[in-house]
Length: 316
Image 1 (cartoon, rainbow, N blue to C red):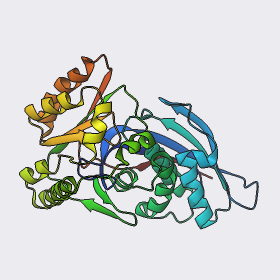
Image 2: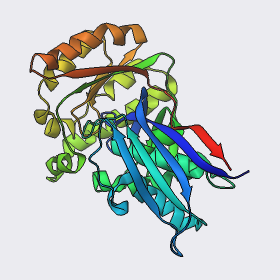
Image 3: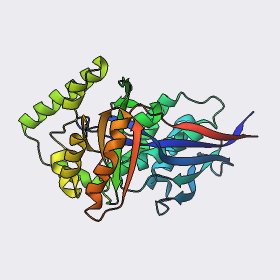
Image 4: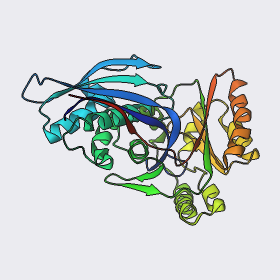
């Protein structure tokens, strides 16, 4: 029986994960975007994805198909597979704009998962990756997968240009994510990275990335902690986030293994070897930003939180 309408949810994410710039990300449990995809009669010989509505915490996003991450991602899928119908997309945004929590990626991923359910033979979720990259490139200016990768697979993921590699997560590893109501757009934050980096900083970053990966595979918290210091991106971006250095200091004093900027910011994250430690630190880290007159929202999530999922479908 054909599916005429499907709704999917895609979680928010922590992108970059300190030393994993444009490569490593993980999901955040609970927070996310929801997209409904509905079959519509094909109006031309070429199938088309259109935005029918946008609601939620953000509603003033572009609706032109090639300017919206959701419709652009779905259009790439339609073009590749030659759908016999058009698709109308309704977005319900749960992730604030410019939050550093993978909101643009979540819309693209949820739209693809919902649209995939309309197919007679749906693709494996990981096979939606190139289409998600196509949509996400609008927000970042680059086809990078550190947000859409974990959204598609769940958990902590290493996302290269062509493949997704799930990474092991030690039991109990927990993320504290604090969002303050500053807005930083990804394409603007990337301007701070245009000048060349010093060779010494690149070497230290490579050592940290190597240590992080080994620590994850061998369950060695001291190596994971060393990998949560960003020697390249954070020094150039942190000045645009009020209270950043103090917040990271408070998190470490409260027992964090380490942390950094989530995506392009202003959200920040810290990893703890246990949920109780993360909960204990949450209010203290949030208070740092609140002293700057900022409104904060905190999220505590296992690092291996689930990815995007289909939550409802209607058959013919």
